[in-house]
Length: 299
Image 1 (cartoon, helix red, strand yellow):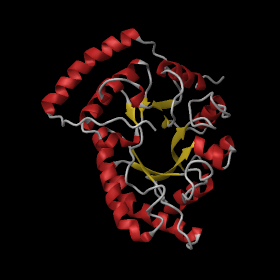
Image 2 (spheres, rainbow, N blue to C red; image 1 turned 90 degrees about the horizontal axis):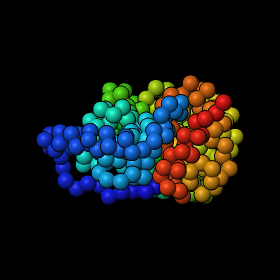
Image 3 (spheres, rainbow, N blue to C red; image 1 turned 90 degrees about the vertical axis):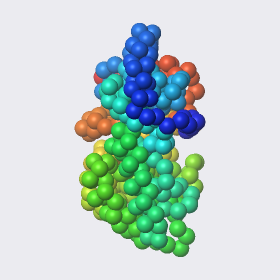
């Protein structure tokens, strides 16, 4: 994922107002210059703001100008201008995808070990605060690496208990936590939470509407395939989607996944939340936006 440098200067109320004023003019200019490629999308596709130029607010304005409804960059909760971004998103009707960072890891510690539950709770509190500040309703959690010599059931139960501990905090804030399933065959060897069946089981055993799992279409294609059937089977436990094509983890059309059919399947389950890009693009931004819009054009 492309990680842009964060702005270094904090923003006071006057700065926020100035940015909003300047942003309105910039947005009007941008809207006159670009095609609203994402207008009338049925799938709520969240694009990566780092595909666009300028400040974070200017990136949001360009996303809106192209007609896309949302953005996602997991580290956006740490942006120093996040309150100003939230205000501009509200003006433009742009939604913010999941916020991540620190709520478990891929290759090291995770809440699949009860010894880390206190640390996990504090990280989730911080994640909720960051999400709320930028206007997101989602935080992303990671299970940690699989623990040698510890049964799968013991590690699953540890995740269940971790989810139950943070559920009241999530409910109070109006935020949903999604456990991310990742592939171990190509990208993340040693990670614990891999299969959509396990994500579903974890969600059901936690038994709280603010704790679900993230179905990353790219990762699940590598781990298990059977994408459409699994989306239909587990849709009640899925709280968020990421996507990229496979192999390569680039935009749709570079690999084997038929995204028109996949997006239709997601829509047909009744899901109306964000489906977020998580890939490195190989083409210019406007061309990629056209490709994304085309994925929504099922009959």
